[in-house]
Length: 372
Image (cartoon, rainbow, N blue to C red; front, top):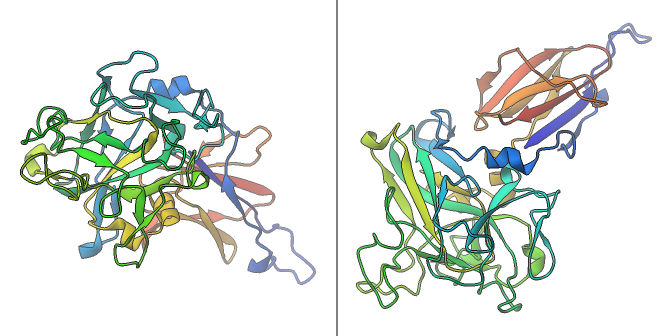
């Protein structure tokens, strides 16, 4: 995913007062680069790999710091049943797959991270499919599970998205969500049942910043979904029965010990209903992101870091969030066609920002952040 800032530097030619233009003359244009670089889905297919946490995948400093690992939904390394039309499938920003309404599942204008996601294509089928990811942590700790996702109507009941809203999560790394939960209830070992319903635990009920953890119902309006992405924390279904099938309404969290750091770990997800489309899973040591960050802030902080530009005398300061540690700053003098090169000037970390100081030149320069 690429972001760009365009700004004309002040001309090096003196004006009538013999000085450079003032800061107020700086023009900023910000937006998502659309069509500058086309990325074919085949390139993403080849990228299925270990999801590695870097030591710099940290937000904040000191006692307020929290670590994270992003797991792309489409980036699984193995699938139990890859038969066409069955269970899970990878989707990309090409509009090749459509839902009950005829809406493209990830159209060309999708805001999915890396233009890919995990789509659930079968209306219902408990454990008919499973996908396994591999993750590798750099920092030990207790990691709470979050998800960035959208919903697509499967035709079961068009009054809401409660027929599209469930899957199974494992009890731990290197565990199977179908066979490794400790209790065997009426429907098998379903302790990892995670679903959108209802208010106390469902991921279609989303808490808002400063609202005391109250979860607001977003289960019915197609205008909120059908390719539009939301974040939420993940809890076990409130309909599990303690001592019989599993603990209800409990946050999914995973303990990463020092001995687990630096080693690939399997993370397996089981199938249940079709419609929920997972852009990414987020493992985070922060216990309550949704109470502190808005949806837009999480997007910007973790997957769409925003460049900002300001003037300091005759220099430009190009800054972006330090949490975007895997991104590279590049520049080009033209977009017709672009010739992107890595900015060699090192960034300076200060106040949770990386900042590069660029000397003013005549003409325009375009900048982007690129995630290799």
